[in-house]
Length: 210
Image 1 (cartoon, rainbow, N blue to C red):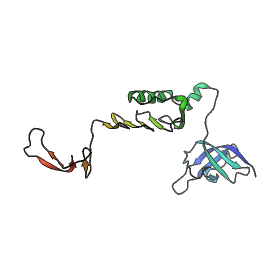
Image 2: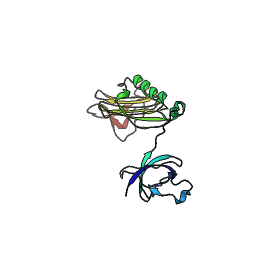
Image 3: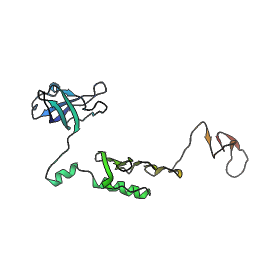
Image 4: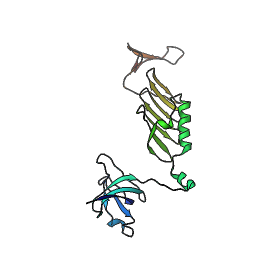
């Protein structure tokens, strides 16, 4: 029994109780009702692909179409450049990622040193091949940077930066809520809460020590 690669259209998506995808192999199954089309699992057992109706995917199946597997989304290819550009990586989104890294004073992104793990019109997931670091850039300006020597998250004007020098937070509001907050290396006692002018009406914090 031989196996071959085929293009197929997704006609039924995966659900919580059945992770298989219902597909119509093209052109061999054209005209077959969706409910009569086969359901096939993802090729690798530890991966999943839910699919959207109308997606075009690569499938691997036997000659009788009785056993098959979903490999993943099929890429688009055409010599008409203005059409192909619709399915290419957004240069604007890539530039936004570079601009954000520059603004954060983080290490710049070398396009020749990356593997693109996932992308769509709203985000790109980069893997840096020389470090294994991961960078996720969103069209909204949100960015996640996870590298061996730094961890940075930026959402709007809120930023978290962690590196060997310490941890820094910035944002319009920063709130710490906990049953215990210790300030300094060796907190000795509960913090005195005042009105900032005098000790009149001062009270002892129940949760903050310094």
